[in-house]
Image 1 (cartoon, rainbow, N blue to C red):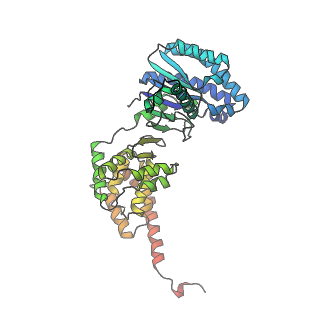
Image 2 (cartoon, rainbow, N blue to C red; image 1 turned 90 degrees about the vertical axis):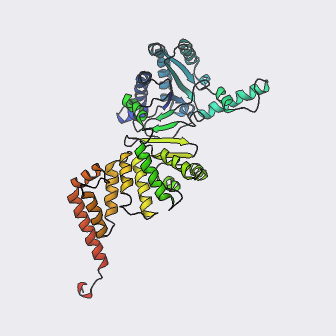
Image 3 (cartoon, helix red, strand yellow; image 1 turned 180 degrees about the vertical axis):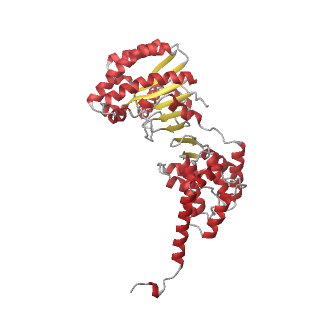
Length: 419
């Protein structure tokens, strides 16, 4: 298991979680706050050194007065309770954001908590309150201008200098950003700090985000095995002469259901298109996450990529058949690679059968014989098991498909048309 040094979390879904249970939004916030205590303990147990959570944004003031008042009450209670929690977990607590917007008693509680926990070392816990990344950067720039005017800041400034003026000064950038409850956006959170982080989105709302959910993104397969890498590289080398870009990235962005910006596509176009560099991009794409319906977004110097494993695999296979005229038999080795790298068997099986039904009878028979050949190891065992389980239904579909094709080929005779 790969344990990040720093995890950042957007705590989303408290209100929806409560509404689903017929409870007020405030109840969801209370349960979310309780869960935060548990996750701090889990993070420490796993060996995470830094945990930063998005608790209240600069935009959250726009919510109803009732909800905001309830959150302020919750903050007051939590900040006092956090004294004991920080001591229990040997946890240093720091609040990031503009705390001057809060009432004086809340500001005093924040300062008291930070001072009390300043020497604790097992876990560094940052709570983002009245935080917005644009606001943070704006405040940083204004302080830089003031220091420059006072002769305390030399120009030109570096990235490190800018980082030193942010609320997170002295804290390493997050290795992983998690957002709960299904939203796929950053919502003005740590825009500077997340430049090279991995993103993990889950549909699980924050109150239900438990230990096993936190572990999920930590078990991502970091690297393909030597055999998988070799197989993939061999296929790319074989196909390289036929077309310049394997798995047309722009088309992948175009058809992927998750929105990607034109800027990401532009970066991909600008990337070095030599074989070795392009192959390194493929390896980023093929680092498959094993858990179904989870999404991992990795950013690198070649551009940004979204991976939703089963969906992307099917898009790739369709591209090879429709755009590059590969036969279904040609794709059998790639089907094996896909299944070995996280594509759900049922998805690729349904795709395979659907494509089979489009073929001529002779081609269908060749593929059928190949699948049913016990000596042929190029077809994955899981695939063959599913074939045997659904063979009767598939045979009927093939027969109906062949009959339909035959009817379409046979011209009508005048005697067959009713007068």
